[in-house]
Amino acid sequence: MKNTLLTRGTLLGTAAVLALGLTACGAEDSADASAPASDTSSSMESSSPSAESSAMPAMAEPFGAGCAAVPADGEGSFAGMTDDPVATAASNNPALSTLVSAVQAAGLGDSLNSAADITVLAPANAAFEAVPADALNALLADQAQLTAVLTHHVIEGRLAPDELAGTHTTLNGDQVTIEGSGEDFTVAAEGTVLGQMDAGVICGDVQTANATVYILDQVLAPPAA
Image (cartoon, rainbow, N blue to C red; front, side):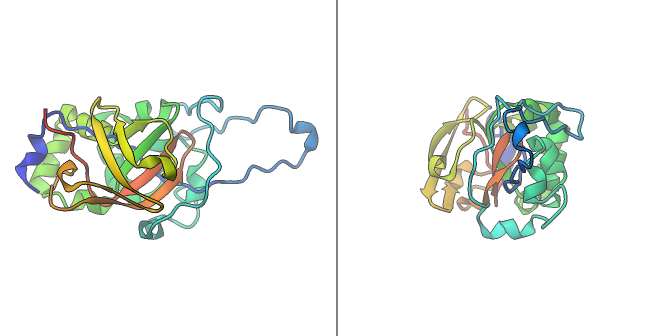
């Protein structure tokens, strides 16, 4: 990757992280139907968002060829991720291990876990591996720049696939433009760290307790100041 990675202004993107298929809630006892659903406790330090502030949308299964890299079962599977906040859910998914390391280095885990409703554009491991090692290591060592890059990957509100295309304001205070429809979404090459080709969603509509996640094949870069 070019040295433009670290000179694009306040780089930003949110590492959040991803994954999950909807788990159907069992309602075995009709007498309990009117009682509020109990909160699922997070296994991490951060508290998970309340049910009132982060209602998980009832949607179809995640889509995209990259979904094959997500474990079929366990806490890192689509089903397993639904009851954990996004940073915790991602930490259980080996397909997002580099993103999780970046989130931890930036100290963003608690913030992402406690956010009410967000959409996370989560770079897969291969997206980080494509960045030259010296540039990536320098970014990981600079907390301010890393925070900017990661928060650029986070959008307020849960965006369903039919809402994803368009220009959205990120938690970094800048904008990201997503093009496409159906199951085919991209971010233009100039909006990526490498700047060579469009970034694509390789696994979309992944649900966690407080976020909808779209896994990308490239790391995005905030617009230059």
